[in-house]
Image (cartoon, rainbow, N blue to C red; front, side, top):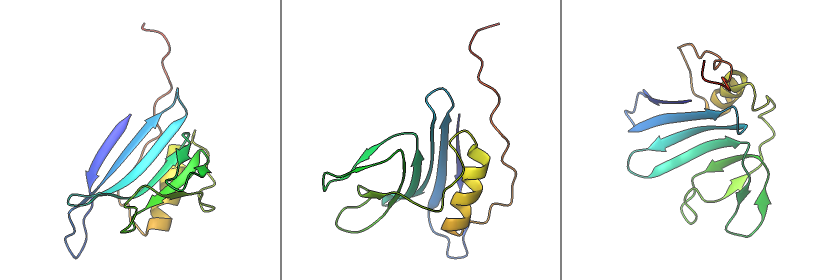
Length: 117
């Protein structure tokens, strides 16, 4: 499941958020993208990351833009405590840390359908 939504700001920054959840793979990501620069901030759960400095970051990590490395360096956050299986709670924690005010409703994903009925 995926979504993409524009971010409204008083300054009018050209920014949007992408979200993706794969219940079968146990992967979740929320990404803040600047149209001119690319990914400037992201949270990934359920997939390891290998930093340019050759250290591995676990299955829960964040990317934050910096000039020399762009979005390539990741770190393990302590503020995301909800599990990958609860994308709504993870979204709430992501928004709180990123100071994003979400005024809509995010619904839980439907259960995984394993067979075609």
